[in-house]
Image 1 (tube, rainbow, N blue to C red):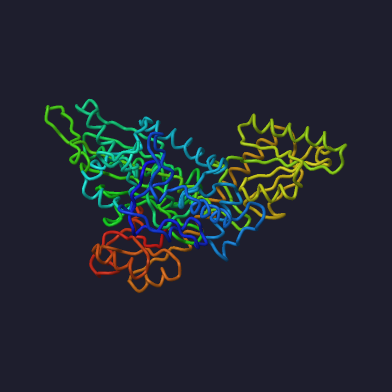
Image 2 (cartoon, rainbow, N blue to C red):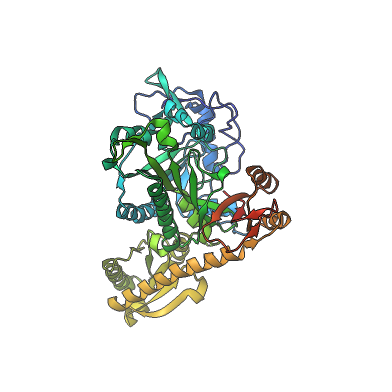
Length: 553
C-alpha cells in the first residue's frame, strides 16, 4: 500500500468509541485526506506509520470486532429506544455488512451486496435506455487535475486521500484516490471531443470512491463506498439542463417504484450545491428518525470544468466552443436509506422489487416419516415459483427449528414466507405470512398448492406489499413536515424533530445562521411549489419559492 499522508487534525483510531464506525482518537500527519480500502498496485509499499501492521493496530482491530453485536446472540435494539443502535444491530443481524480493518471502512456481505445488485440491475437498464454507455476511469488522479477547478478543490480538499510514495520512492506528483471523477473525465473528454459530431458524449461508470469522513456510519457515510457516476458532455446549455433533469427523474422514479421511498425532488441551495457545479438537483428522503438523507444527486456543471480543462469542440460554423456538462450519482447509501425507511423492531423490511429473496419456504415436520413428503412438496413449490420468475429460497436446513427460521427470515426482511407441513401436504394447501403485517393478521391459511393459483396469489401479495410500504412511508413523511411562515416557527418545528417547509429568499449568510442555530440545512427547493407570491420567513422580503429545512445525515 502506498503512503497516505493525512492531517494531524484527523482522528482515525479511537479506542473507546462505542460505535467502531465513529472516527475520534489518534493523530497522523500532513494532509487531512480520504481513503477507504485503497487498491494500490503491488509495487506500492506500505510504509506509512499511520497504517502500520504493528501489534497495537492488530489489538485495536480486535477490540473493534469485539464491540460488534454478534448475529443471533443479541436481540435487536428497539427503534424507539436507540435508533442508531437499532440501525447498527439490523446491519449486523441481517448480515448486510461488517467492519473493515481500517476504521470507517466496511465489508459488504453477500446479502447486502445482493441489494446493491438489484439497484444496479434497474439503473443499468435505465441508463442504457437513455443513451448512456458504461466504461471505467482510473482510481488514481493527478493532484494537479483537482487543483484546476478552484471551487472543486476547495470543496473536496478536506476529504482527499493522497498517495505520495509508490514502489518505495517519492512520486514526482501526488496522486489523489478517486473522490469523484469530474477532473479525470474532463481530461479524457478533451482527448475524445473535437467536433459537434462527437456530441453528446454520455457515459457511466460503476466504481468505488474514497472520501476521508470525520464521522462515519455504515452504508450512509464511510471512507470508501460504491456508486455509479454518470458524466455527459453537450453542445448547448439547454441540452445539459435537460440531461440533468432527466437523470434526477430516473432516480426519483427508482426511489418511488423500486425502493418504495417517497423522496422529495428539488434543487439545492447555492451553499449546498456540488463543488464545481452551476446547479445541483437532489432527491431527499425522510428516515425513520425523521432525519433527511440525500439519496441521489444530478449536477448541471455548466462550463466550469470544460473551461478549466480546455474541453472544446468545433461547432457547425467551425467556431471553437466549450462543452456543457453534467454529472450524476447514487451510491450504496441508498441501502442505508432502505433500512432506515422501512425497518422495524423485528429487523429489515425489504420492498419486494429489490429484495434478493422475495419468498422463503420453510418446511415443517416432526416425525421422520413425514420428512420426505414435506420436502418433496416444498421443492415443488420452489420450482413452480422459480419458473414464474419469483426470487425464492427453500430453507431445508435441519440445524435450526422452524421457529428460529421464521424469526431469522423476518429479520432479513423477506417479504413473504410459505410454511408447509404434513397436514398442508395432505390438504394440498399452504400457509403464507406477510413480513409487513406482523403476527396472525399477516398470516393466511389454506392457499392452494396448484402452481397457477399459487403464482397468482404470490404476485398479488408482493405487489400489495410494495404498495403498502410506499403508502406507509409517505404517510409518515407527510405527517412530519410542518409548514412555517416565521423563523420562530421553523425553530420550533426543527426542535420537535420535524421538517420545516416555508418561503425563503434570504441570503447565504442567513442560511448559515439557520444551520448554526438549529442544526438544520436547506435540503432543497422542491420542484412541486405552491402557487402565489410568498414572504420570506427570515427576511420578510418577497419569495418565489418554499424551501425544506431538516437535520440530515
